[in-house]
Image (tube, rainbow, N blue to C red; front, side, top):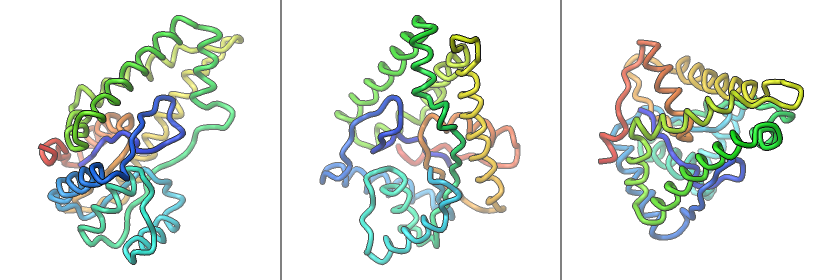
Length: 239
C-alpha cells in the first residue's frame, strides 16, 4: 500500500505548503491518520529517507521507541515512525536515493527556462502555483485524513505528470536539453526507489510506503507492471 503525502515540512521543494503539525489540533489529526494506516496491519513501513542512511534511521527509531528523541515535523517521522511503533516493528525501512547533481537542480532548470523559453516557464509556474494553492487551501480547511484521501485519488496522483513531461522541452542557450536531463534523473530516482523496495519484499509481507505524492504515480506504475505485487488502495483505509 502506498500513501502519497504532501511534505509537512521542507525547504527543498520548488513549490511548498505551510503546515505546522506540532499544534494540538494537527497532532490529533496525525493520530487519526496513524490509526487509519495501522488498521492495514503493515509488517513493514518504508519512508522517503536515504537507503544509505539506514543505520542512522535505525538509531533514530530506537531512540524514539525509548522516549529519547522528539520526532521532527515531517511525514516520514510523524506518520512513518508512529505507524511502525504502533505495529511494534523492529525498524523503519529507508528506501530513497539521491542522484540529482549539484550542478543541475530543478531550480537551475527553471532558471534556464525563464531565460530561454519564458512562455513555457510561465505555464509551468502557473500550473505549480495553482496546484500548490489548492493544496494549501485544503490543508487550512480540512482534516489531514481528508486531505490525504483527496491527494491519493488516481487523478490527483497523476495530475502532476504533465509538469514533468513539459520540463523535457527546456533547453539552455546552447541547445542542451537540461530539462530532459533533469527529468531523466528524477525518473531514475523513482526506478531506484522501486528497486530498493522490491528487493526487500517477501511473500506475505504487507508493506506501507509513505512518500512524497509526486513519486507515487510512477511507483504504482512500476509495481503494477512488475506483475509481482498486489497493490491495496490507501483510500480504503482513509475513508
